[in-house]
Length: 479
Image (cartoon, rainbow, N blue to C red; front, side, top):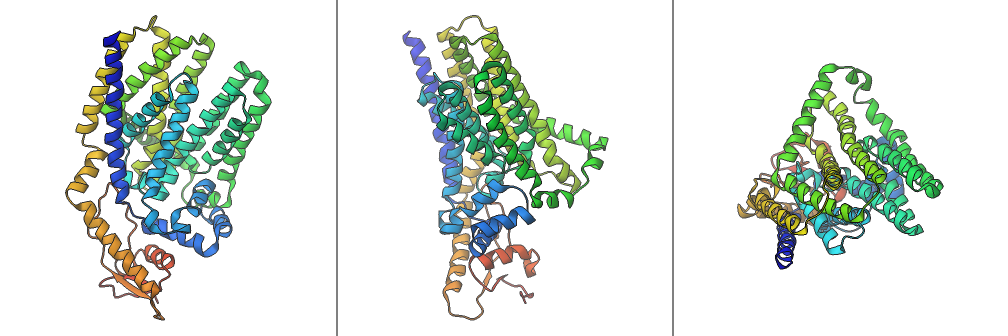
């Protein structure tokens, strides 16, 4: 009994150490994060037009991402100052942590809160270690809204509706409905997942919770209304129509070969990373032990197995939705795999946990705890040794790249603010080009010589209320 407790404590201690390691580097990166011109330009539009007018205009002319647009309108860049920007990545990661915690706790309600929190933290640390282009998905507000927030709100609405089934408390239904509606308005990729989840929810209610069928039908109606708003907003039709012909692309067999090969390579690379496969294994084993104790009936286990497999398969149409326009434009931005990685991780953990619980006849706590401790040890070693995102942040910090970047950005913004406070009739600022920046943290949307990328000059001009922003050496002026 004593040795069993020792290995259990060792397992938890190793996981806690990995969380401290990962979140420490994430927070350090956030400390050196600054808004790029794109974020500032959107914030300037909200400042000038007001929330309602700007929000409506974006739905009509830009896209149907009503949740992403709304979150842009309530960011610190709009109501306060860019100096609070560093809190946005921290808040986004914490929201992701809370969403995973609620999901784990709702599905595994006998888990202690501390264990569910540790498992959620470990999942985030493992995922962040392999996210592609963290500068565009974590440290860039616009990218975070498109790639991370839909994952968080999808996990939230699932967790809250499971809580509702457990307790029949109306507050959980309301929270689930709100989270569901918000989740559908961030990213078109989730059109490949949300209808599948809604269908699974209906089937589960029909077979196991028939008395709640009317309530769940109303929740499904909320989800469908969000999908319709995303798809049929005028901005969405303009965006899709202007980029490519869907039918031509779907009938192109070379496209399908390219798409499936790219998906296969990306998925294989994801699972090959030590922090990913070790965390999937020990989370799956822990969940299997829980399910074995709960003694769920076979019908529910089979349903959960099918549901997890359905979510796993849904990552294919999710990827396809983004590959269609990107392939038409001749490029694939790898950061679109961020939400796919999250869903591959969660669905694989559940698949493993359910499968193992079905095939093991008895749980031996000593052997289980020894195995979990070994996996946690390998996980921590792999996390600290791999040449991934944490190493990149560490390298940028120790090489002084983050400090140089912060100095450049502070100097630039100080010049903007000083010029804006002057009484000059023509408020003009010439800034040096950004020579060095940490690619792991900053996603550049930068002015180019002679206003070649005029949108980014214009973004700085509008946000800081200047008449002209140039690069030093420019010969072409605004007017």
